[in-house]
Length: 99
Image (tube, rainbow, N blue to C red; front, top):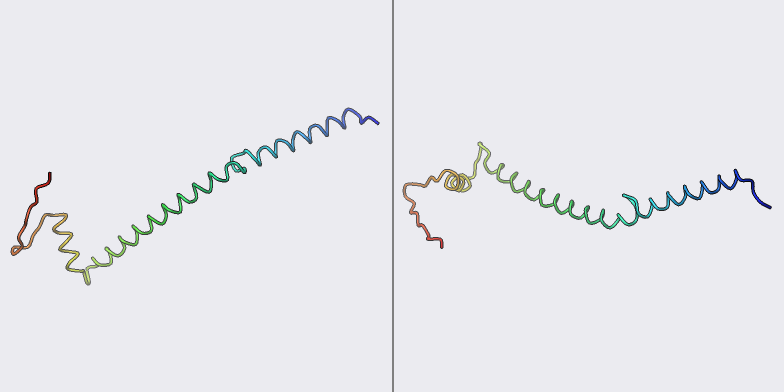
């Protein structure tokens, strides 16, 4: 028994749609082949987030130590020397030749 031509066309279109969906599931932008790349990108972003959080925590600690109500004198002195080239009158500066 042969099926009518319209039924064959309908089944052919259904098969083609299934093949297109299957190909997107395998090779599409979010398919199985892109899964590994997505995992690598996720790991890179997690590492970047961890690094950024560590820098943020370090800066938060420094800001807390510079609070006007109780600034850490050692940190204040270090920042003055580093940023403004200021030294205390009784300090001795020794320069090293860099080659």
